[in-house]
Image (cartoon, rainbow, N blue to C red; front, side):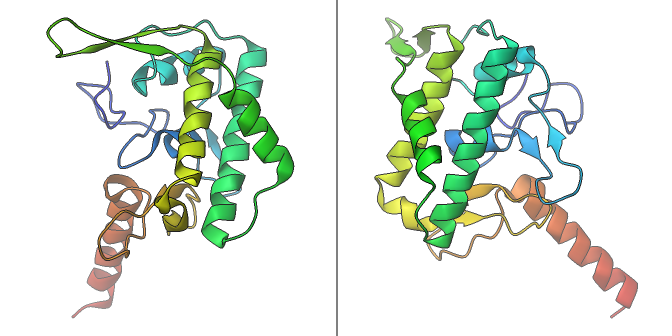
Length: 199
């Protein structure tokens, strides 16, 4: 079982663990491909069951949907369309038409339906198809594009990362997709450089 940051309880987080820290749903999905800015990106959606696991850990569903290789291929194509659209928003440029068409197609699928418990303390999701999960991801991006936050989409300042994020800080000075990952790494590098160079 994982905590909300994607760390499996009882052990240190690994590169294969999903990241949800400080991220919108659509950009957390983009983060399933790590190290985009390097020659060797790391694929967290390596197998169909990884997509099912992400579906549960993201909170989109309580039961992992059955996923095929075709579902996985479609999910990866949607992910990259969202990545490119996030980059376009950050650049203030129009997204590619084919990316918007793919996002709209995914969003057109019925989503999972939330059901509030009788005591209003928990939510159960109905709809266990992977298409429902991908629809929720696509709709989250569409909601972002229709909001005032569309102008606050940035690309992570870690050159190895490349993940889009929404800067909702009051000062508008956020630089990292997450302070727990890329931000912490940048701080460590700065500290080490100062230590090596001396006072």
